[in-house]
Amino acid sequence: MKKSLFETICIIAIGLIFSMQTFAQSGKLVAYDFLSLTKSAREAALGSNFLAIHDNDLSLALANPSLISPQMNHTISLNFVDHFAGTSSGFASYGFNLNKLGNFAAAMQYYSYGKSDKTDEYGENLGQFSAGEYAFNLGWGRMLDSVFSIGANVKFIYSGLETYNSVGMAVDVAGSYIPNETFCASILLRNIGRQLTTYSSAGVEPLPFEIQAGLSKKLAHVPFRYSILLQHLEKWDLSYADPNAAVDAFTGEVAKESGIDAFTKNTMRHIVIGGEFIPAKFLSFRVGYNYLRRQEMKVISRPGSVGFSWGIGLKVSKFSFSYSRAAYHLSGSPNFISIATNLGDWGKR
Image (cartoon, rainbow, N blue to C red):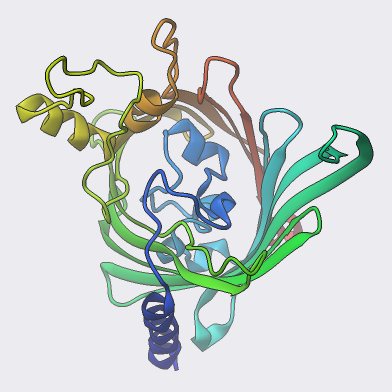
């Protein structure tokens, strides 16, 4: 029964891959881009939107379903992000176990763009309109044997932007190698899917497809865990052609980096590093660095802390709290808040 369920999910994923017109690459316009945003405070603190840390944290399962475990049964996780200019996002998830069917995590995700003024071509105010995007996610995961786990998410998506709306479907497929409690390595194919109905007659838009891989290791004699994420493995060149860059006096073309320097910088664009210092079981301090984010979002004259992130994790009684800030731009840093509890613990004395 378990095997047939996973095979069914894989068949759906493969079918969606071949039904897509193209894979969305970094820098291209895509539909439902909110699916690729960082969602939980812990992910944000460690600089990424995906982690390979196997310690029964339900907030990580939305991005990496191969981490869904029996220990998440009856766990609730609430996550909120206040973005810029009145926009916000978040998700609520619940973990449960269905005996021989495996371990599941259901989540409702949203992104609110707030309200904006509606004007005509002459600039006259016609009132206000709202916009938002939503996704219902059903995740499933189980251990194949003592060291390998697999998982998948099925996403049903709705996007409403003023009078334009679209419906879509996507699948994530993930696998993890977990030889012990201190090490985990994962690979993820996320947002394999397509629009079922489009915003207009312009045609089907691609989804933010991405291939990611990551690992984490908790040191044996130091209360510290490091995390390394590899992002956008579906595309090698993540560099940005800056139109304001220096122009070659002879060819008139924008000067491009070459050689070992260009190779090193492009390699770093794929890598996100993070670390957790855990002085006690109830407390952790987290930091992260995203080189790609820094290169894309920094202001040359004042780069500041763009690309860096930090956070804290705290366990109090039956609750787990996480808070983090990630510097996306000089103008400000979003706040990420996560709260989790296991309903089964409330019945214990």
